[in-house]
Image (cartoon, rainbow, N blue to C red; front, side, top):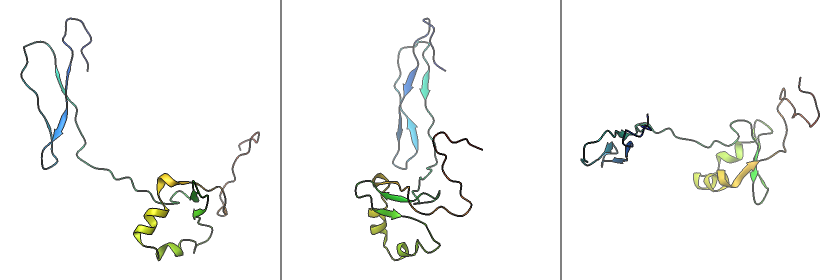
Length: 122
């Protein structure tokens, strides 16, 4: 809640800092008495990792610059070559900033086809 009435002093936002153990803390100094309110924004104590998993939603992937196919799951064995690659190779070749969706490849059985312009959706 923010004080907007003229008779109130503006809210004071107190920035968060962290101790050497990573715990959040807020520091402020005393100021002349007024009707302002110190605001300490809460921070999450949990880290939620975001993991890039190629093709997890069925997306085929290709490079943005070289347009070569990087990840295409057309068959049950399409991923086998990746099992022999080390982490450094995968990190370099499946970089999210260098990937785009590859619109080629086979559709799995039962997958819907894309709706074309002017086509009715059932």
